[in-house]
Each structure stands twice: as structure tokens, then as C-alpha cells.
Image (cartoon, rainbow, N blue to C red; front, side, top):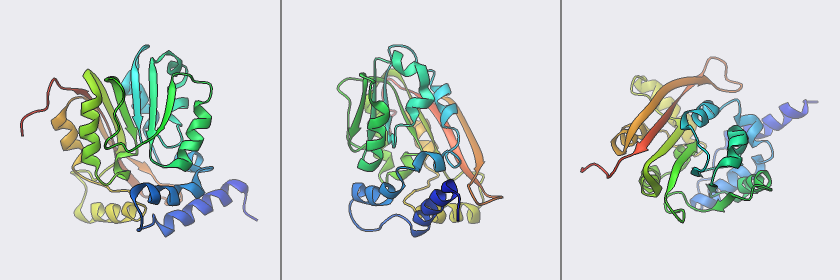
Length: 240
């Protein structure tokens, strides 16, 4: 008989092998894919989604900041922010998947200044400009990701910070290697791109950036490419 953790991982791996549904709208596909995984989502992905704590540290969140997380998933970022979360003026956690948001609401209970919002990251806007917007492995989950970046630029106050950690296709990656990563991730609705960093650098002043590789659970020897980017809102968009 499998140990409980291994059995739970096996169920998630089976879902990953089956892939994200191809029919229905974006929200429907997310719900169908993640609802059966929601209770084990964080434990499994802690070994796959690297750099999330490092991103929080690079954001340099300050008391009184107004913060938005787009694609918040289960709201696990609350634990990574820790005691600093209580010092924020507001923290809006936005996602489109009801099953993951239900977990996020449980985490946010008792935090009066934290809102959990079911909305589309390409169009949702806060009530006033914010000091920081970040995303952790969410940009690649959104087919129209460029609209998310543009929407983020619009919601930031002058000098506001954007932070993103996500998988990508590195410029120094081989053509075959990048093609394999694109196909492998694409099966589960993760859309890898080599265009994230160029667009981020065009629309924001870069404060820090790192491109790294990390291990993949149950696939020894494979190291998936990811990046951490922190930028600052420019006074206005550069002319194209």
C-alpha cells in the first residue's frame, strides 16, 4: 500500500499526465484541472515551483504598501510574506479558479485587510493604484499573458513594483530543449514563452533579474528553466 503522501502525489501526477481539458473557457478548464488537486496542490508544487520565497524578499514590501497578487492560487503567498502581511495597507489576491480560491479564503480568514477575489487577471483593476503587483507561476497559465502585463502596468502607482517568478524558454536554451519544454508544459495548460522578459524589460525599469534552473519532482536529471524579475513602473509606456 502506498504511503499517504506518495498516493496523493500519484493522483496529481495522473492529472498531469492526462493534461488540462481542451474544451470550455479558460476558467472552466482551470476548475476541471485543479479542483481534484486543490487539497494537495501546495505540498506537491513546493518541490516544483522554485524561487517564490526569493521573489517575496526581492519585492521589499514595506508597511503601508497596497499589494496585489494576480493568479494567487491557494493563497500560499500569505505564509511566505509572514508577519509583514499584517503591516500592509491592503492585499488583494486574485484568481479565476474557484477550487483554489476556496483554499485561499480559508488562509485569509481573520486578515481583515486581505481580499480574495475571483476575477480575470487580464481585466481586473483595484479601486486605486497600488504599490506592488506580483505573480508566482501564474503568467504562463494565462494564454493572453501580454494583456496581464499591460493590465499590471495600468494598476501600479508611479514607482510601483512588479515581481514575477515563472517558467520560461531561455535565450541560451537549445532549440530542441526549448521545444521539449514547451510541449511538456503545454500539455498541462502552461504556455512557455521566450517573450516574457523582453516585454517586461520594455515596459518596466528593471531592478533585478535572475534566470535559473530547478529540479522536477520524480524526474531526476531534469532541470526546468525559470526566471525572477522585479521591475518598477515607468512614468509612461515607451513609444512603440
